[in-house]
Image (cartoon, rainbow, N blue to C red; front, side, top):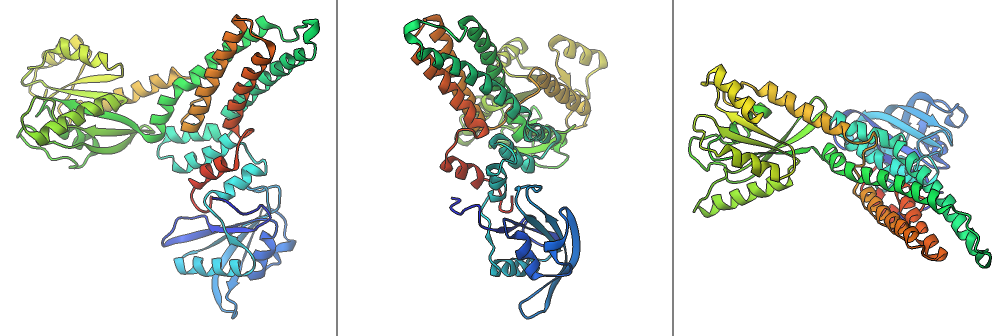
Length: 457
């Protein structure tokens, strides 16, 4: 829990722990420049302009050189935290970092807690809460797609839209509450038809954001793609081929895969989380049966399904299979595997009949076409959503509550409910929108959010 005040000067390594070529130590607070200057030998940092870098040394209390460093100086309010700040770039020895930290602490700084730099940026008005949370998502992004989602949110597009909606709701709430002062005259300041039309538009937009969460969440965490099918269809071979490594055991013995095997690859900036599952069949083997149940569970949880069919046997009831996959109500591909021995005419017939793909996982044929189809499917899905995509569970929860409140307000208008109750329901929607951007918050919530950040950010 962050229990200290903004008057403290805080310090923390901003680079990962361990040995590296360079390490960066951040200092922020009213006395950040003065404290850094006390341990720095070079220029007088208290006299240099903002956004300048200076070479010098940092020495121990005995005057021994700890390291040669570069110090960047930032004057308030033109820094990340909007406070006086310095960044010390030193050699990436854990010993050197530790010694510099000790020197800074001895001069009056204290160690920053998790997320405290970003929390100060939020409290000092650098950005709103949604943008602050996007900083953590940006650091954690592992693909181009997740990076783009975080960057858009950090730059404020989502926040600006929430602020506009909230501002308009506040305007209507003020007009409705003004009517309470003229209750005896039965005056209507807030045009109910205009309010209803506005609320219908807002409700539709909020619903679109809620629908985008499933997409945003898989972009953030990787698209879970279940590889399923009967035993010996080639599921493990396909996983190994996609990953270009022997991740899963491949055997001619049916039922070799009994547990879930997962790994990730990035295709055209999109992270896919491939899940190899046990073969789907009736079995008396207790362990294999558990694997089959887990495979079915992964089919339910996945966002995308690759169903492999052994084309050398073709024992599947394909019409029934397609119907079963459609009932899952999620994107899927039927893959006819082991087609390297089939004629071109047969392959064309199979692909045309079920709109399926023919591959040979073992011979690595059709794999590039499969990857292309996966990428196209995801990009097509992206087009179906608005330009703003949410990926934060807290935002989703607040938007869901906003949606429910807006539905209540629309019902209030239809039933001509009393003005005081109508105003209260509008205020509830305003409050939930405010929670997203930090206009309405509590210290406990802030502590929870920023405690999930890394130290030094």
